[in-house]
Length: 68
Image: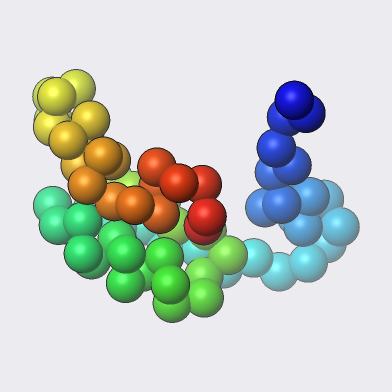
């Protein structure tokens, strides 16, 4: 199985403007809304314990399915 292409890095390398967003809300729905809003990338700031981060990521289907 081939490694997935990092389209964000590829676009930056090609000189195309990329607009991203950091989400620091402890709510998976906020990340889902941000992920579907058309940004080039969405960074999730999930500080705290590892368990908190794991629960947060597992609650966001776009992060676990690789669709965004």
